[in-house]
Length: 376
Image (cartoon, rainbow, N blue to C red; front, side):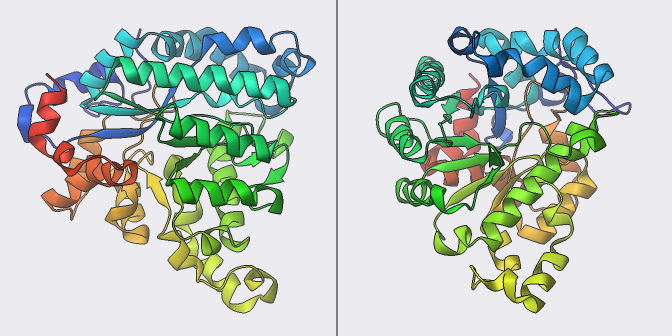
């Protein structure tokens, strides 16, 4: 069963339709790495099933997104996505159909569980990270992995980051845009950011839900505008809170094209210029800091991608599909092809070269011949 959210004739945006587009491309197509795709760890669910917080989830979902969206998710979206989240054969077939050579797996954001106490948090994270690592080990060359961590317990999170990268071989971590109301620039998280920089960890920032309450509880606005806004707020805290200034080596990738920040950075820059409180923690221009962040290509059309490139530069854009959810966009080859003004080298950089650099892959793995080898 395919996740299907196609918008106009002739534009494939699900794996089934993308298959025809990439068939027969062979060695001519550059290596393509998807840095925004999720996996579900079923073994984590029994660990949290009896907790009051987990049992309260259905009611909170109704409050935050409204009954029609919950009903559609339960009846349509989740049944379509579930096999893709849990069946590796389905995932590999979809990758081939989309023209994706490598997926960087990240846990489903539904499994952050930032409310868990230390003992439970340790076990939930262990099970998820070991699952991701096992999938990657079984499919070397096709799958790489990001883990999760208990960011609500910063000291434990540092331990988990070290274990995930040093022992499990993961490439970094996926984190949410805030932690139980705590912003990512909070002083308590400073040890995490320092360790992430020291280890060269890729930190993928991906929201789960929206914090605007009833204002986004209709029309799926909690996802449509709420989640990009959450990313916008999180990145703004990292900029104004000094995290990016103090840790210039951080490898941050922002989901959903970075939300709205790359679309309206002039106001952020102007604020830093004229307001003393905006300069309290950072000495570096927000426009400069913006270009230290990487952004996925999940902006849906070539106009949006062209604008993102103009704001942050080709070197900062990577492929992201949001596989396998219905808010994903799966015609990654076509999106890059339709974006005007890109040289072949720039297209290759967006499709896989930038991601390969971030992930520390050998340069030999980034050329077209190597990509063809991965595809068999």
